[in-house]
Image (cartoon, rainbow, N blue to C red; front, top):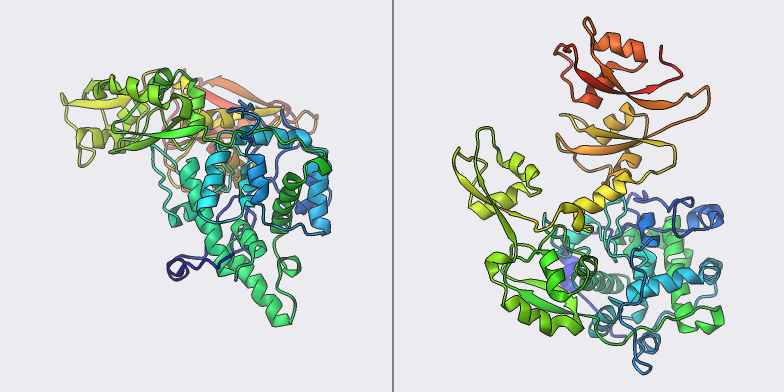
Length: 541
């Protein structure tokens, strides 16, 4: 293959890592493996713990519990895409114990490979076309299996998102837009091109060595370059198999090699290749105004869920307020959709709420009330700041249908994931962030870890928390007589009660009471006031 050199990348791009299934240059893992005891697809405990750190699944368990694991575009007998993919596979098989370990796992879980192929059926043709256009091996059409199990809504608490699991710093590097309306890390065409650009750059950076390029895609080029330099200094070989890399990365390259071998020789490994059409499942319509996604669903005569899976980069209930937006639609329905859209006036494509400003209204308060965003309200009303006056009429874009209908909007995804119990005996607590609080301080308050709180709320422990933001905390309810049982209690304040008196009565801390109830510790409690408390009933007296 001709060496691909990108001089402007070499001169201008920082050495940053890309993926959730990756380690930063400090070699600190940014994710954890799937729980083996959750609902849905089951992962062998041996796979997670035997030869423990060699294995990595970078996203949360949602990737194994896809809501629509079905073939999107069945092919005719002569247009199956897999023979084309097989012809473009370029990674040679390497007879190595780490590769064999991955082969053994995939061979013993053929149902998993069937499921991810069905998910890939929406996107595979488009990805293969981009790989062909950019002259890179078709093996990378299999990389989303490693990264995200071909689930575009996958998200790791290392802040990585999408099929290719971009983290924010690398999304910025490859100009993937992220704002209130959209996150292009999940947009299939945009993120795929960005992933190809990064892999191509890495191939040139590491002297046309795909193994090192793939390792760097996982761990960051700084990590791999450091390992190469260390081996050179010691007079050791500098190929991937001899480098001292994070254990996660040691498994990452073997995974892709194993997948290439399996898809090249499926009969040998007893794996079924699900027929997928070698033609586009979706096409693009450039729309010149915002469009409510429920309207799009009606015009296309497909489910709203399908609209989101074709446009997973959309965060909300509508397309962004930009000059044109490339809406992805089923190719077979494009012509009819364009005709119907032309008949729908632009002012009817989204719903506008007229609001007359009342005393006490604020832009931030209205944004919360109407499930909108401060910047959206400013933009729609040409406000330069947050100043509004009583009697002023504001136009606020709102969803046509109730919030729950938009099941794959950012808010609904967050709500579902934060509401899922991490273990059966967990007690849910909603914590409102106070000034000066951090993940560390909140974790200490609830006797948990910053990493767990971040994961429960689809955040990174490094994120800055906003005052007033609500976080879901899962408190473990223990059943032994020594540990007691944590229960939520509603307590009605009586005459003479104080925070100190109540804390002593229920064996909790004053700052816990104030945090749970959003209280100012300097203000007196009022008789009749109701407080929520989370108490160990075995220790309360």
